[in-house]
Each structure stands twice: as C-alpha cells, then as structure tokens.
Length: 425
Image (cartoon, rainbow, N blue to C red; front, side, top):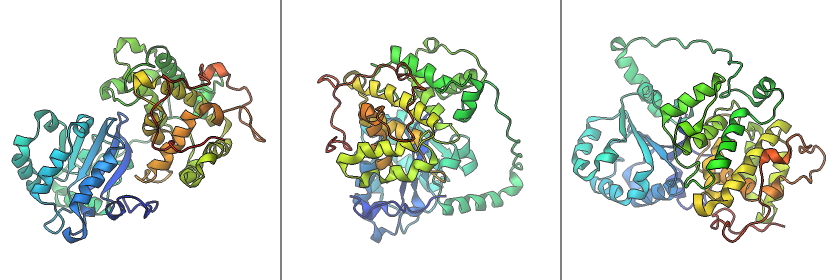
C-alpha cells in the first residue's frame, strides 16, 4: 500500500510537491527497469499545488534515472475537475519531456483509463510520435496490470485498491471466478533463481559464490567490460525467462549464442533481485539509510562497520560482486558506467526493506552506500578487520578477480554527486 514517505526531509528541494506522494519509485520490473508510479488521487486541489513546480519536480526526479531504461505506471483514478492540470499544462509537459526522457521510457501503463483519457489521447495524437504511442498499455483493472508487472512491489494507493474492488464487485457476474493459487513447489535441485544463498551453497558442494553470479561475471569480465551502458540497458523479457529456465534446469547457457552483451548483465541483476532476502540483508537496511548523516570523511569506515555485521556468506558474495563492479567502473571511459551510474542500477538490487518498497528519498542513501562500496572497494574490503572478521581466505582474491589498486587519469570517472566532497582518511 502506498503512503506518505516518513523519511522525506523538509530540506528536500521540492518538499512542497514531494510531500503529497504523487510520484513514487516502486522497485524494478521483470526486465530490471526502474518503475515509477504516478497517482492522480494524490494530486491536491488546484489552489494547493503549483503545477509548474510539479513539472520541475517530475523532471528533477526522473533526471536521476532517465539514463537507464524505466517504466511508468499511471493510476488515473482520483483525477477530477478539482485537481486536474489544464490542457495547456499537459501539452507543455509533453514538450518539456524531450527525447532524453522518452528514449529510455520502455513502457507506460495507464490504469483505470476513462473516456477522458481516450479523448485526450485523440487530442494529442498528432503531437505524439508513433514510436512513443506503442509504449502505452491500457489496464482496465489491477488484475490486467499484474499480467505485466509484479504488483506486490508497487506503491498502490489504498484509494486505487478500493476503487478496483468496487469495479470488480460491479462486474462480478460478468467475470470468471479467480483461480486458486497452487501451493508453492519445492525448488529443483538445480534451481538458481529465487532460492537462498545457503540453498545454493548446499547444492554446489559448499561453493560460496553462486554459479549464476560466477558465470555471468566471468563472461562479462572477458567480453563485456567495454560495452557502453553495461547494466543500464534491458534485454528481451522472453529471452531472460528462457535463460532463467535453462539455468534452473541445470542446463548450460552460452551467451555467445544470443548476440546481446546486455543479456548476462540483466541475468546477474535478476539473480540478485530474486533472492528471498537482499544480499545486504533486511537487518542492515536502517543502518544504510543513516549513511548520509555520517561525516563525509568517515563514511568509508562506517561502511566497513555495517558490513562487519553481515553473515560471512553474504559478505563473501558481496565482496566478489563489488570487486567486479569496481573493475567495470575503471573502464568508464568506454562503457560510460562509473561508480555513480553503477550504484543507481544496483542500489535496489542489493538492499530493500522487509515491508513494502524503498521510497524515493531512500534512494539517495542506498545509492550512496552502494557507490562507496564500488568506488572505494580496496578500502572497504581490505583485510584489516577487527574481531568477528569476515575475510578468512574463504574466498581467494582470484575469485574477486583482478582489481586495479590505483586510479589512472584515463580511468577516473566523472565526479559523483554523492562523492564529490568525500575525503578519505
């Protein structure tokens, strides 16, 4: 259920708009694309909202993500004459969201559309490109939306849920009764996705690094480090499901057969996202959110302290993954994926709350923490640990792959918005 964000700070540059909860981040879809929800029922009366500020807030928020593929879910319920923007504002908004925003918008789901929406579509049709129009999908109810997205991770306002139930009751006699959900099946012995790290370790002779993670990292290290937009782009949903099925059945996968370097990258992210518990664990979530309140010169040390509380297995897997992402960031001149860009992609694949999904304001500390792990990999994961140390040579350095110890002028990424003022002691 959606609610107002309790972590939203009054110092937010668009607090006057953000406090209404109109726009929310809602995790990732099945292709690893970030999902945003826009809820009309959250729009206050016209006199309580500066619509120019709303437009600026939308651009401010999307600017942090439009370099990656993303999806928008638009909940139309709740729009009325009391709160709907003018036609002129809508036309201006479409122009303001130029190609930069439209290019990587891969899907726009319009939920509970009305005749007004369809009329507006006809009005603006001459102004809307055919290519953009193909991205729009109408969903008459939440059940239709579930055919495209995992709704359990969406921030759906209670008002929208109640309206959907009302529609269902009105049409109850015209729809087939819902089928019963079959009981969960035990995982296959060769299952790779949706099972715990411990399960994978037990089924793979005690190997700490999950096979899918090792296979994808090895392939990408050998052939994909210079691929522009690595981990940023999506892949064919049908192909992703096919590869997942092969892995779960214990069958070999040759990524060369698919001719898409982004496919193994998406598979890696999908593996992390489908873990029953995030790699950084639910217990660390609140600690990670506090990273922004730590003095910048102490943040790397603070990261080390947080990681010391991780289970040994999680720490080993995280160290292996961060070592590889550090390598990717060192090739940012060619792949355009420095530590900041990688953090935006991986933040919510490494950590999410135990209830609901991360709010927009939580993305800043989550991404900052992830960026610190990647950018300062050598310092964060150095072997100088105190009591309860994790690094006991259970994972050899060679498993994490070669990691360059120093930055070169050609490999130095552009300044990060999170780390630009960070001083490492």
